[in-house]
Image (cartoon, rainbow, N blue to C red; front, side, top):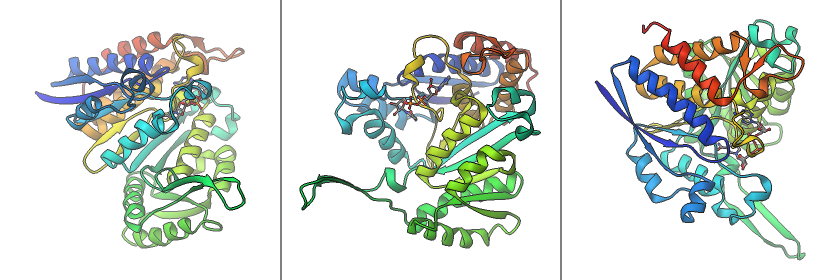
Amino acid sequence: MKNYKIAVLAGDGIGPEITKEAIKVLKVIEERNDVSFELNDGLFGACAYFDSGDAFPQRTKDICDNADAILKGPIGLSHEESKNIPVDKRPERGALLPMRRRYNTYANFRPVFLPKALAHFSPLKAEIIGEGIDLIIVRELVGGLYFGKKETGVNDDGLRYVKETLEYDEGQIRQILIQAFKLACNRKKVLHNIHKSNVLKSSVLWNEILEEVAKDYPQVKVINILVDAAATLLCLKPTQFDVMVMENMFGDILSDQGGGILGSLGLMPSACIGDEKAYYEPSHGSAPDIAGKNIANPYSMIGSVAMMLENSFDMAAEAKNIWVAMQSVFGDGFSTADLSKPGTDVKMIGTDEFGDKVVEKLRAMPIV
Ligand code: NAD
C-alpha cells in the first residue's frame, strides 16, 4: 500500500467549508484504492495570524515541509477586516507569497473548462461557447511584480511614492515556458503566448526566451497575443485557446476572467508545481461575502484534489473519475447558488450536498 502525507491548510472564509467536501472525496479515493492518506492540518492565512501573530507559522511550515503534497484552501479577509492585520503580515504577503517562494512553485496550472452541455452556466451566449471551453492558463508564479523589490517613502517634492520592481531572469522565464510547451505537446500543440512587449521590457526578454525554447518544440505552433487583446478574445472567442502562458500578474488577472466566462470562480481549481514540492488550491479567494452560509461551490477545491492525485500521486484514472463525477452532478441539474441563478432550471443545493453527490457518483464508478 502506498502512504502519502498531505498537509491540509483549510484557510479562511469559505476555505474550511469547501475543504471539508474535498476531504470527503479524498476518503472515498482511499476506500477504493490501495492507498492511504495521512492528513495533517495546519493553520495558514488570517486564521493563523489571529492564533499566533504569524500567517505562516513554523508549525505549519513543518507540516508542509514533511508533506508529499499540500492541499490549500483560499485565504484572506474582506477589504475592511484586512485592516485589523499589519500590511506585511496580511495573508498574501505573510503566507501565500512566502509559501510560493519557500517551495519555488513556479508553475501554476489553471484549467478553464466548461462542456457544451453546461453552456447555460456561462454569461456568454451558447454560440460563443460552441462545443465547449477547454483551456489551461499556465501562470508563472514566483517572479515578476509580486516578488520584486518594493519601496515606499516621500520624494523630494514631499509626495508619498511607491516603487515596485518587475524582475525576471532568463532561467525563471525558461522554466515556465518549458512547462507550457510540454503541456501544449500533450494537448493540441498550439501555445498562445500572452505578453506586453509593446510596452514592457520584461515581455521583450520573455519573447526572446520563448523563441529559443520553441526551437526544441517544433511541433508546437506559437501564437503571440498582447495581454489586453487576450482579455477581449477570452470573452469574444474563448474556444480558440488551448494552452495560454503568461507572467505572474497577467495570469492572476486573466485566470479570474477565466472564472468569469465560466460563470463562477467556484469552477476554478489549480495546481502550483515546483521541482520538489507542489501545492493545490482554488484560484479564487476566501469569498468572505458568502462564508459560513453553506452556499460556496466546492468544485474548485475538489478539482484541486483531482489535480493533486494526478500530479503528485500518479493517480490519473481516479483524478479523471472525480472530474466525471462532478460534471455528472451538474449534468443531473444540480449546482450551488453561484450557478443556479433565478430563471434557470438548475436545482440549488448546498456546499455539503454537492460534496455528498460527488461522493455518491464516485462510489458508483468502476475502478480502472
Ligand atoms: P474572491 O475570489 O474571494 O471572491 C470573488 C467573488 O467570487 C465573490 O463574489 C465570491 O463570493 C465568489 N466566489 C469565489 N469563490 C467562490 C466559490 N467557491 N463558490 C461560489 N462563489 C465564489 O475575491 P475577493 O472577494 O476579491 O477576495 C477575498 C479575499 O481572498 C481577499 O482577502 C483576497 O486577498 C483573498 N484572495 C486569496 C487568494 C488565495 O488564497 N490564493 C486568491 C485570491 C484572493
